[in-house]
Each structure stands twice: as structure tokens, then as C-alpha cells.
Image 1 (tube, one colour):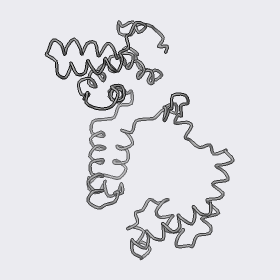
Image 2: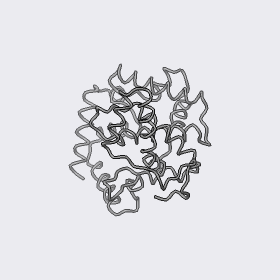
Image 3: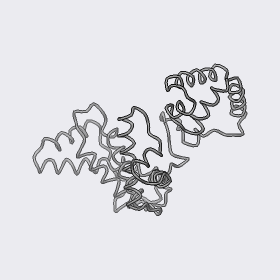
Image 4: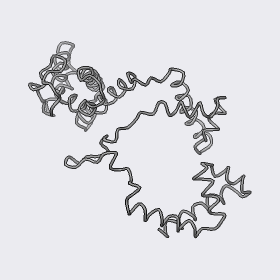
Length: 260
């Protein structure tokens, strides 16, 4: 794996050691149960023996304009946190636990040091909105609308939407979604191509299936999926019960699925 230079933060990456899983287990047990001197020695060996793990993780962030030395230092902090919190009794490899910890530390660093800064007040608004969403969902057994959240917060709907969008971390098209060790699937592979014949034919099939629905079914699907209304709101507008809306909606979707 090439990083543009052999030395990072004064560490010669070409000479980094790799510990066996058995040795990692031994060191983690010493860190947890040994005396202060033994624990410190085992911790140092554990850190130095997993620096290649840090390198493999920061490789994912190499094209984001961040200094490699900075990313490496942050990644090591994540590694130390993983070592401090890992339970040797767990039947998992240390790397399985360590990689998400290192990733989390790096993502927090990049988020907090991003050139596009999100104000503290906007961040607080977004977190309050997310907490309120969870609370209302639990109370009403359904997901609340943005209007309901904004009303509870006594804020304009636009302010709530803007705050929530501001804290969403952008995803690279080249972010790996899945890998089996030989073939990697990236985000861009999951995005449909509008010019693709299969997509075009599928859209025609969906439109044709919708045309076969009754006017009431079309109206309910339109209100639910194009205007984003809840089943209760649709029921009030049409003048039927929420249970009827649910039944008609389910039947219409099943009809579309059968006809595609």
C-alpha cells in the first residue's frame, strides 16, 4: 500500500510489526489484568503492533485534502480507545472492533475540521429535532412529519429542514459499500442510470401498472408518496378511516407489483 512517503509522524511504515491474533489476545489480557508496569508495556506493544491497522483505515481518507500525519495521529487515538475498551472475552478479532473505533475518530475529526462549518446553534437545532422525532415516534407509533416536529420546537419548518441537512455527512461516490475480499462494490455502483434500457422499461411498466388502478387508489398513493402525507392525514382528507387507507394502499401496491 503506497502512501506517498515511507515515514509518517516519524514512524517508518516499512518497518511496522504485525502481531498474531494469539499475541493480541495475550497482550489484551495483560492490559486488563496485569499490574501497572506490565499493562503499560503490553499497551505499548499492542499500539505499535496495530499501526498497520491504522494505516489501512486512513487509506480510505487519502483524497480528502487532509494531512496524512494528522489523520495518522487521529487514527492512533481511535486505536488507543479501542484497546482501552475492548473486552478480551468477546469472540471477535480485535480488528473487527478496532476498525469502527478508528473510523469513528477519523470521521469526527474530518467533520469538526471541515471547511464548511456548521454553527453550534444549527447543530443544536438538528440534535433537538432528532430527539423529538424519536420521542414522537414512540408516543404515536408512527414517524412524525417535519411540520409536527417544527410545531413542537416552535420554529419554522424551513429552519428544521436546513439544520437536519447541515449535519448530514457527504458520502463519496467511491465509498466502499461491500467487499468480499476480491470484488468491491462502491456507492456509484448502486446508482441507477436513467439512460439504461432496463430502467427505462421498468419506468414504463410502473406507469402502465398505475394506470390500471382506480381513481381512489391513485389519489391515496399520490397523497402518501408524492405529497408525503401520513395515513391519518389521507383518511381525514378523503373521509374514510385510517384502516381503510392502509388496506387500499396495500392492495394498490400489491397490484402494481403483480403487473410489473
